[in-house]
Image (tube, rainbow, N blue to C red; front, side, top):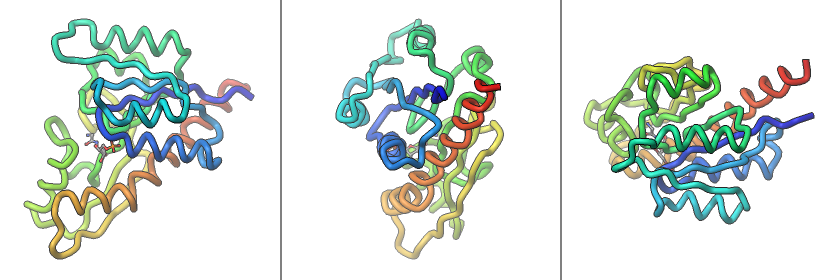
Length: 201
Ligand code: GAR
């Protein structure tokens, strides 16, 4: 049985990448294998996590590059990637790019979509917006990526309570611990197993 070949795209600390690596080691992610990590930043700590887990890495910086997406596509092709997981990837992929991978790109977003999402809503900004609005519950969403930023079909969603005295940083950590680090590996396994079964038929 051939496992689904996964690439994880990152831009920062990579705690969601770490959750995927741990899920692979712990057996939660068993239908897929992380074959490549691509970072948009050379200084992303996520790269260290990948190297420690002996996963090949590639840096493709967006700034000043007119072949950003074609370099990513070439690497995906080279590694025979079947599923792309955006794990703290701070760049919006073009319509052209996403149309090449229909329902084959997953993203984790740190809110309950359709709240606090879309262009310009990423990282700590999402939690700042949730606190500024005064919602009492937020959470995380794993969804497929289509041509609308944060607009693709939802795979999993989990609510997380907001506490008195929360700061964006405290809230970010709670959303990661209670939702993101569980939902992303579970969704990756779900989609990987579907792809794997499709290959057997
Ligand atoms: C995570 O909270 C992720 O949901 C968010 O950035 C953080 C990355 O952390 N992604 C977005 O906001 C995308 N719109 P990590 O690098 O430690 O996984």
